Amino acid sequence: MPGRYPVTFGEVELLGDLDRPSGWVISKDGVPQSYVDLDDPTYLDFEYVQLMAIVIDLLDEGPLDAVHIGGCGCTLPRYVAATRPGSRQIVAEPDGGLVQLVRDQLRLKSVPRLKVKILDGRTATAELQDASADLVVLDAFSGATMPLDLATSEYMGEVARVLRPAGTLLVNVADGKGLAFARRVLATVGAAFPHLALLADPGVMRGRRFGNLIVAASRTGLPLSGLARRAAGGLAQARCVYGEDLTRFVAGALPLNDGTPVVVPVPPPGVFG
Image 1 (cartoon, helix red, strand yellow):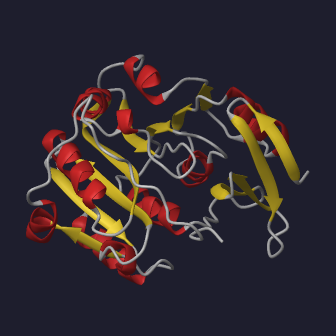
Image 2 (cartoon, rainbow, N blue to C red):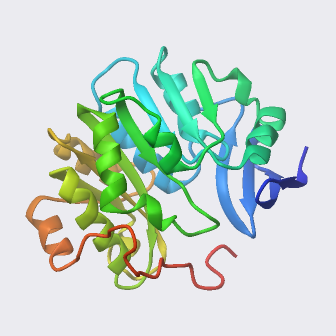
């Protein structure tokens, strides 16, 4: 049912999609957090989620062992379960009230082989076994900002420990004018994963407006030509930057470490209407 619901860390609003009867949006403090289509888990409404799905679709065929840091409506876990049957997935979401709401209202229990842990990202990652995941998706936000402790070199070392040698990391970063924070996140990820690509809307990529950028990373390689082609030809009409262009983009940015004083970017007023 649509309406406002108390959760562990405040209150969220559940909104129905007027254009899709089975579509639902979870919003917090006026910021859309997740979109779920209960009848079609392959329908992805948010552009940044579409970009993540492009990367996932280009990974080797078959089921995945996936870890999702940040859950909300569990849009991508539903997508992976639908497109790669047999996948085993773990979601870390610290808001237990939100998890219960999604279970009660958005059919979370119907997602096969999905385990949800009521834990913050660092605690959940520390509990995972070495080389146990093919995919780690880092999509954790407090409102519209990324938790800084999930963007540091120390945490990326933990992610590298959990991923298999050929595993893939996806990071959702939000940034605006100048993209200073995104550059530092890329420098941090790049210290642990030598193969990088950045996908985003052209306007966001140029720093002209606040929005989401997707970092894809691996220790063994990424399907770069496929990423560039699908990003440009997809619904999001995104750019994919890699190689020397990405090296120039990141040049001069310092990696983030635990305790690094940095201001995490927040969206300007009016971005979300």
